[in-house]
Length: 394
Image (cartoon, rainbow, N blue to C red; front, side, top):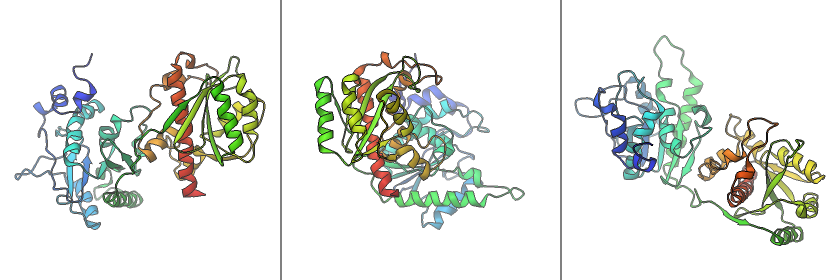
């Protein structure tokens, strides 16, 4: 059992007690500096040089590029920003720094964020990303390249999170090749972060939509209501015990439906729903929405025996159009990036994941209420994301 839990590690001192890097490093516990007039916190990875005689952070030659780039946008890094490190102790060569070190030093970072209350946090590289976003997004985080340039609203911190390239990667010696295109992109990212310092995060950031779980005859009444009202759009999502409906023992366990951005409805699936769902999916008057719609389409054709008519939006395809990086187009990542809701699938994933296309998962072991709530959230977030994407692209 760990000596301290995650909440204790995030409240101060405990992380330093467990890390103990400060006992033998060259420059221990370097404090944040800067007046932060523009409410901008710049989080660097780790100190590369000692503090100067006046106690000011000496960030090394590679960070002069950052100071100059901010100056071009009218920002004085020491007057308008506050500067600190994801690892507050300067090591001999950086080799001592691991993801565990960053986790332990997170208490210093989060304490500073709570005290200084920045409007935007510029995460310069992978270690700052792990320090801030890593607390809320622990699985399938992928490479730093999957996050760079995004602007994520965070309700807990009441700030925008903007990962940008580590300026040390852009600083080159005279005999090295200088990547001009990468530097231009980096400056564009900084410019976006500066603009966000004057913009409040949306009021509904981090807020889960309503969920309504239906059982028995309430399911039929709800489906009849949809058939009668004929909403313009309908997002739906299946939870199944495998990826391929052609497998023996393949089964739909539940279906989630949303006809607006406020409420997701989920219900256990059985044959009593079949005639109503067949009629619903056959109505051309209702535009159908899904994330990775080929999944819902093939399961509907195989298990219900009807095609889905009038597909109008696939959130995954639109995400690929927006940004074709890996690990970007998934629904959970999109929900986090656009709505500031951390990964709500972390608990459900161990039941819904299967190691191969021909293997059944363990969805039958999942608590039914938890399964339906998760299913309802998937459906309503698909609808909400689709409306956002259609506003931007259609």
